[in-house]
Amino acid sequence: MRKYTFSRTELSRAFGIDMATLGTGSARTGFSFGKVGPGVTSEPHRHDEIEAFVVLSGAGKVTTDRGEISVEAGDVVLFHPFEAHVLRNDGNKDLDFVAVYWRDGEAALDAAQRPQLHAAQSSSSPRRQRQMAICIWGIFLALISALTSILVSCA
Image (cartoon, rainbow, N blue to C red; front, side, top):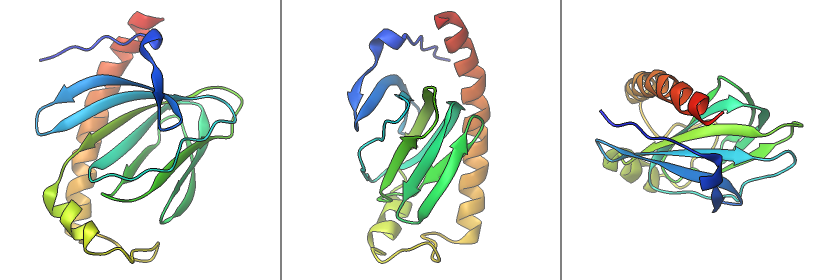
């Protein structure tokens, strides 16, 4: 078991927004805390990891290669490897989120071989998507528990 304590004073600029690394876990996973101020938009970026944003507070829009969706506290957004993504705060208070990311060589190779992906296509099979959703849900539940403790101790 590992415990990470987070302080808002540890935030630094990354991707055009305020970020702080919370730590790394087993199975090549990483965890970060992000804060997007009102009216602020992150820089578009893509990478080889699968990434999930767990929105803790605030509201905004996520834009990817596949389209745009609205997000608010309690939402989880999953990004495939190499899927460009942008997070925009269109609310009037900070949009706080946790990013969880991990490497999946098979998914990255699949995505890299399909650069023509668009909203109507999927970079993985329905079975693989279900497996990833189950994995994300487990990580989400564990993170909510851990983050509640961290954020309460920072208040």
